Image 1 (cartoon, helix red, strand yellow):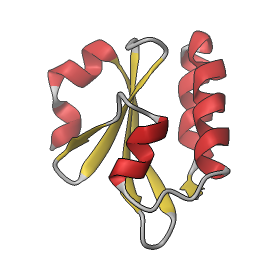
Image 2 (spheres, helix red, strand yellow; image 1 turned 60 degrees about the vertical axis):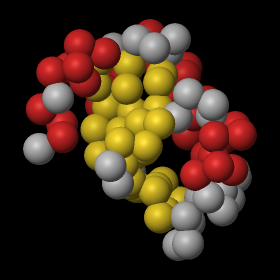
Image 3 (spheres, one colour; image 1 turned 120 degrees about the horizontal axis):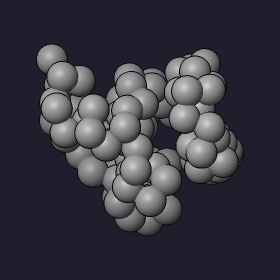
Image 4 (spheres, one colour; image 1 turned 90 degrees about the vertical axis):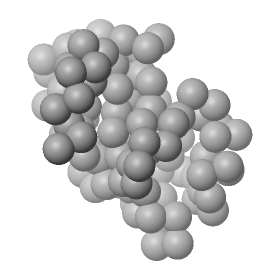
Length: 95
């Protein structure tokens, strides 16, 4: 899958250094795998959830949330936001 863009991940882990290992691992797995569907993605990431048109990943033992838009047919992953759990719960990202 082609991930757009890693810069958002990097900016987040500069602010929250303990997220770097799990975000890097997520990036490598997704980059090296061509998921055909949400079900295929859930086989690798069982905690991934669909929220409307977006897919949300739990990162770092449920400490962080990675919000993406995935176009399986084009093999593209767009990173929409990386948030702490409390930022995610406020729901501002939904607007």
